Image (cartoon, rainbow, N blue to C red; front, side, top):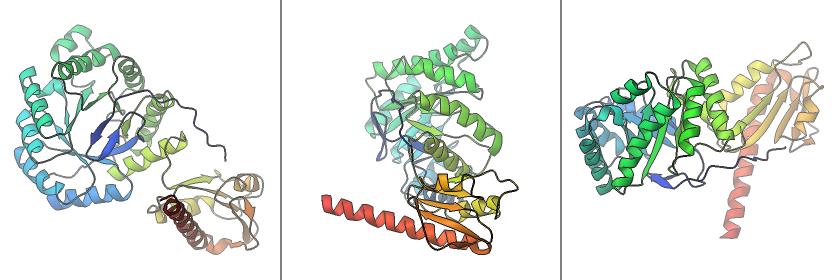
Length: 372
């Protein structure tokens, strides 16, 4: 399949969030954020583990109180994915979670306080060897910037970002990334473009408060798709008013569609019409749910008839072409003699795809062992 990626990534410095590299050519990471009460340790740990299973590289946790900070210390010991502490208003909470060994601090300087407080946070991050994310948001700019620009503009967001980037430079602290988020797609895109031309730090990209799962996914895909296609972005979050697991899924689907990063199965399916020989929609929906645990990169085409089916199947790992009662099966572009029973197509395909994923993984392990 034609899958070349001609995107030239913006050059940036490299930082680490825990053991995960960000920037300087490292894979673009997908993040999400818990929506449980952080003080509910069991629920938060359970959600973080669920996010890990679907591939989240980094998870952010809100820490609004000292009690939440104490809970985060316990949570950190029960998970392996790097955690980012989301801090607003009280800089002392940032100092506390830094002591507890968090992997990254997310602060919004516009509501964290004066420069002396930011200096304290930076000093603590340096002492504990952790990263910082400067999170600028169009809805919480500093009062003087609001008065100057009267409304959020790209120049306003970037001026705020540069104010604190300059502080980091003066403090000789370079282990940080920056975001300039807005709920408006064009405002966010232009802000990131402007910031990308001004600094070399890694950029965390996202459309904040994007909305529900449908509208939010569309807005995020449009905005982040533009930026990623221009090589802008080193880590991302899809912000949805939905289960955080959906944020991770959409994030990987976005990267996969741009041939930037592939994880799991890429389903190619027809929108269906009167020619379909089996229920394509229910088949694809069922397989997406059943095969969420597979992280092996592979393309699977499920086409309900013979018009486009054979052409798609020639260039996919597993391909299905709808036929009367029984449908054609392709593997690595080669037509197989056995056919799929349309009444049992979901179960049969699940078994075939799992077996193929196992074969691919084993082949990769053999190659690695031969190199070693």
